[in-house]
Length: 142
Image 1 (tube, rainbow, N blue to C red):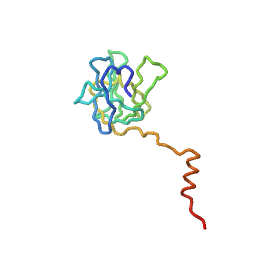
Image 2 (spheres, rainbow, N blue to C red):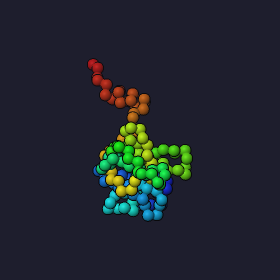
Image 3 (cartoon, helix red, strand yellow):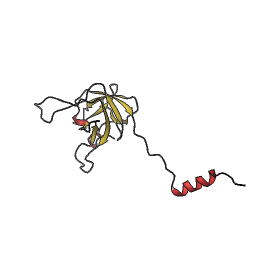
């Protein structure tokens, strides 16, 4: 998903192996991910997507006079936060230490690689389907 604030930006879904850069898009105040080859196309991550940073992740400080916040982490899982609040940013990365950082707060220019996409829900047989399958595969008795 791409944050609501990126709906005016061209986008595509992420793929395993994508090498992305944290980017501020020209026609938006929001940051997101793009490839070096297509800097004006937002690459949208689905919740559960895992990424690896080229170096320790950094976020911008809460106050402009402070230094960037070094997170000391290189892997993260994409998730969405504050979905009950429609006018705030939702796209975030959760790091192994439990720290959650909004994608729009990442320092520009950081490079990440998409390691893994989320597993999609697979169809689980219903109780009735399960009984039918069992009947078909039950051994024959003579």
